Length: 163
Picture 1 (cartoon, rainbow, N blue to C red):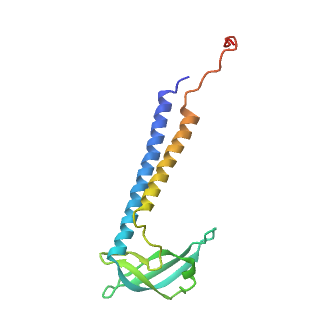
Picture 2: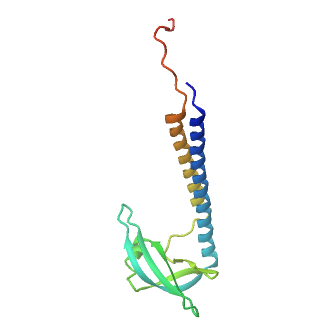
Picture 3: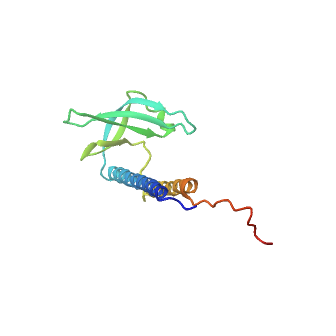
């Protein structure tokens, strides 16, 4: 039995969706890598205040802080959230001072000086692209095998191969 044109269209649309999602993830990863590297190249330092801290309960125990800062001569308050290494987490009390890196051209882009460093060669981008593309192909292959692969009709018992 052959796959129908409708199943072929479903297969094409499904693969297209996963490929498009993979491409979007790659573009997003590349943009985030670019911003983080730009921040580390053009950074300015300022002191900020720890406003909130929390631990996400899972096996690796990621630790986060929310901070705020103001620029001299600018009444606007800027801030952000950043993941910090666990060994530094306990040294950052609420209301404590933390050094902030920010972009002078856009102070909304900032992080603590304790955050994890930017990948140097874009490994994060390449890894994200490879993983998302492989997932797209695997999901497409499973979907194809389950719904669209041609099925053989059961053989006629009256016709048997000769030995």
